[in-house]
Image 1 (cartoon, rainbow, N blue to C red):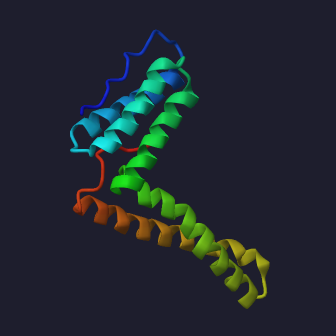
Image 2 (tube, rainbow, N blue to C red):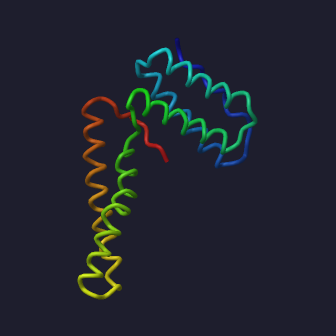
Image 3 (spheres, helix red, strand yellow):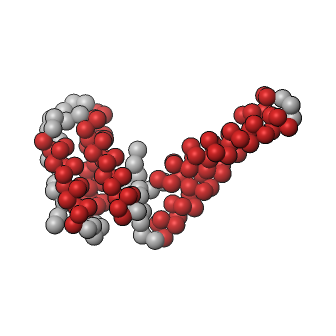
Length: 148
């Protein structure tokens, strides 16, 4: 079963809709290059059908793209470029940066140093995420698509 084509963009002047439409179109073009199971293709086709039948809006297009990417990650462990880096950036700040900043500020008895841990957590998060992205690329589970 093949992926259903997204309808051509119907005359809209809204640049945000155009940008979201182009991102979804790029994702679908990338997915056409991959061998996807029937079950996944059917679910993606349902998402495309919803976009094709609904009036164009940023919310409809971006949510269809997000649901498609979530489906690919859940069922096939396929992720877009920099997926893990972006995810671990926030996790690094929250899980490493804030506790480290608290430890620094308590140990130095000066709460002005609470922000010192944030860049450390940021760097650790980027490092962990980048290594996971590299692993995904080496195993062929990374799409040549960058989600924005």
